Image (cartoon, rainbow, N blue to C red; front, side, top):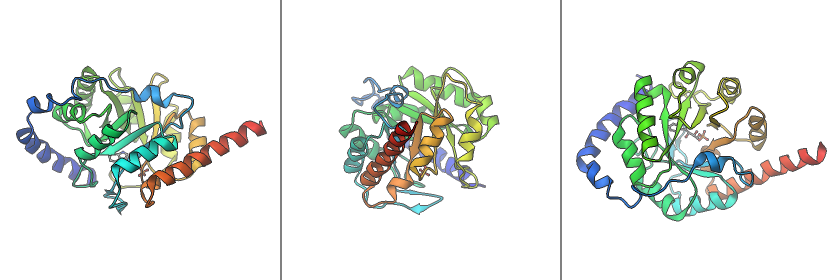
Length: 271
Ligand SMILES: O=P(O)(O)OC[C@@H](O)[C@@H](O)c1c[nH]c2ccccc12
């Protein structure tokens, strides 16, 4: 059993428990449930923004503890002030140390698009995402049979949520291309082996049709990588650990975005 299988087995039990503790009827009473969502697609294309989706991630199966004491309020606000385009919040507790309260807190203090970073396998979790104030959900191709992914995506869109589909290879990509997906994320980390390579994004970029916003995910630690990935058509860049391993993640994010902008300026002057 690889780590993804373990996470999914655990998630299945967790979802069943949550369904009885917090029935759908209750979730639908949330103020966010009938509210409007903010479009990640649009925000990533705003010219005044970096395209960076800054993540709140306390720990992970591959890295262990990354930041035990993060303040979601301070970090989420700081990320956005630093010039991030959007936020990503891990809500899985068992493997990533996150929870729904983290996302609700991020929602309370920010107007930007928020991605619920979760292992979604059931419509219940899509309803939950909407009820805690998320704008976008992640659907991981490696975690779902093709028809299930499609159904969850259509359901999410019916609630006004955008769908970021995560792929790691050409098969996952080609099997799942359809209108219910808004953005395609290429995870540079193999969720089964934890191997990370930016080449995964570069190699898959040409196979992603233009109608989708392309997002490069994981293992981005150098500002130069952003500039390089833009040349491959990527408009979104999901970054967690590089910021979170700092005791002041928002400051690390600020320094990173300043460095990206400096490279951009040097290039413009030089050309
Ligand atoms: O911390 P990193 O290497 O910058 O990665 C962030 C993000 O891409 C990663 O957390 C992630 C990508 N896909 C996921 C699916 C589930 C959990 C986590 C993830």
